Amino acid sequence: MSRKFFEAKKRHHYVWAKYLSRWGNGTKDVFYTTKTGKIAHDSVRAIAAEDFFYKTTTLTNRNVGIIKALSEKSPHHLHTQHMSYLEDILKIQSLEDMYRASGIQDHEAETLIHATKCNLMENLHSSHEMKVLSILEALTYERLDILNDKQHMIEFMMFFGHQITRTKTFRDAVFHAQLRRNSLEIEFADTIVHAWWFISYMFGMNIGWSLYSSRNEDSHSLLLNDTGLPFITSDHPVVNVHSCVSETDLIAPKYADLYYPISPRIAYIVCNSKRFVTGINRVDEAVVDELNTKITKQAMVHIIGNTEGALLNYKKHLGQRYNKMNPFL
Image (cartoon, rainbow, N blue to C red; front, side, top):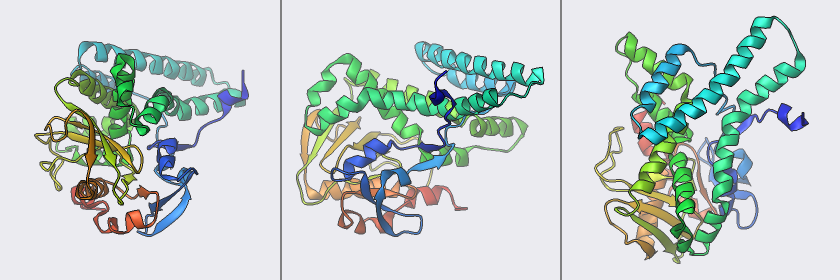
């Protein structure tokens, strides 16, 4: 067996490092805000990451029951996919259980078990990233026609959905929203926390499929920014920028204008408000400033830009929505 099977990936990025490097001016170094509110210039490897963020946990029968109940609310074909992934994970868990029950202590087995827990979801997210490399590259060069291909659109929307649900910002907001008024709610909330590595992946699949399914009703637009003010991104790179979004409560908004900056010059937005027309839209500085402000407010710690100046005017907005929803921070 290859040595790579035994190498546990410790540092998990919840925002794709290669994506963030689009703000690196040809390098891997970007300008970003730190936990102390300063602006640093360093490698993308240092940001939007946490050790063992996607590490899998052992699922109890009750955990599995709650996961299945959540999945059953999905369209049938997605529920089938969720359960297929879950079955594979439970098979791996069963193998570990048999190994533990044997009483045998084997260094190679322990190393492989640890690596599998660390790498399984990280590798799954990486597989989605690899599928959209050429798509993001084409969009950077204004080739929106690449999404006329059905498979490309499916892959991009699945990736897009996970860019919402895989972040630490989204995770903490969901954890904070869980009710714990009785034993059933506590059990449900504990499962959400314990199995978030899997539940968040299901949610991302569902959002991605919903966006794909509604593609003919929503506006899918490429925003071109040729102003002197570049787009910035953050540790939560897809945000709803519609004015109906509450800055204090985690409630479902009436409209979803899901905005995703791709580079300092290019962004993608899916609008069910019809704010932008389907196709290519050129934006002025006022719109860029609005979008940068909204992505900053919905970030947790990091906003990322291609220059220090691109971040200076937005630092004061950093994390405003996140902090209002999490008053104990």
